[in-house]
Length: 302
Image (tube, rainbow, N blue to C red; front, side):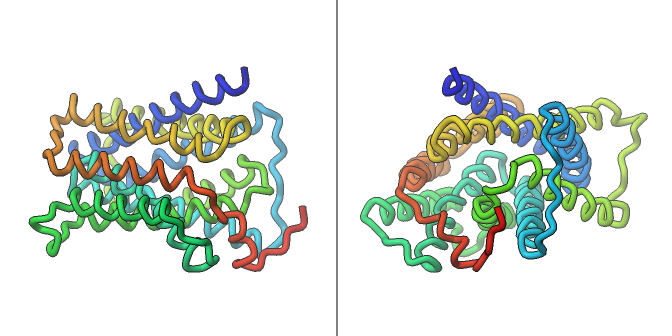
C-alpha cells in the first residue's frame, strides 16, 4: 500500500509543480514581476511546510553545528537561485523550453561526480550525457546556436543551480526533510523580503486580488508537493521517484500548449525527446553521489 501511495503522491506532486510552472508563465505574461511571484509563493510554501510538520508532530530540530548550518544555508541559496533563474527565463522563452533545459540538472550532477569524485565513466553514462548535450543543441536552435538568447542562458543556469540543490540536499540526508526545508525556505523568504520592496512594485490587491490569491494557494500547494515527494523517497528508489517526477515537464508543456498556445517547433520537440531519454539513462545509473560528503569533509554528529 505504501508503494502505491508513494506513486500516487508523486503524480499529484508532479501535477502541482507543473501547474505552478504554467501559472508563473501566465502571471508573467499578465505583467507580474517574476521576483514578486517567487517571493509571495515562497512565503506561503514556508508556512505550508511548517504547518505540515506541526500536523505530523515533527520536532523542529535546532542545528547547532556551524558547518552543517552553512550547508543548509548553501542548500537554501541553490534552492533560491534555481526558481529565480527559471522564472527569469520565462520572460524570454517558452515554458516548455525552460522546463526541458532546467531538467538537464542530473547530467551536471553526473559531471560533478566524475570530475570531483572520480566516478567512473561507462558507455551508458557517456551516452546519457551525449543525448543531453544533443537535446540542448536542438532546443537552442542549431541555426542560432552562436547567439543564445537569455531564455536559454537563464534556464541553463537554473539547471546548474538545481544540480547544486540536489548535491547539497543529499549531504543533508541525515536531517529530517522538514527541518532542512524550514531552514532553507525561511532563509529564502528573508532574502527575498529584503530585496522585493526595493526592486519591484507590489500589485494592488483591489485590482489583482484573484491572481494574488492564486499565487498564495500555489505556494501552499508547493509545500504539500515537497512533502509528498519526500514521503515517496521513503517508499521507493530515488531514481524511480526522480523519473516519475519528470511528469511535471509533460503536465506543464500540455498546459502551455492548451492555454498559452505554445507550439514547439519540430526541432524543439526532437530536443525535448532526446533530453528526456538522456535524463532517464542518467537517473538510472549507479551513482557515487553519497561520497560527496567526503569531498566536502563533513563530520556528522548523528
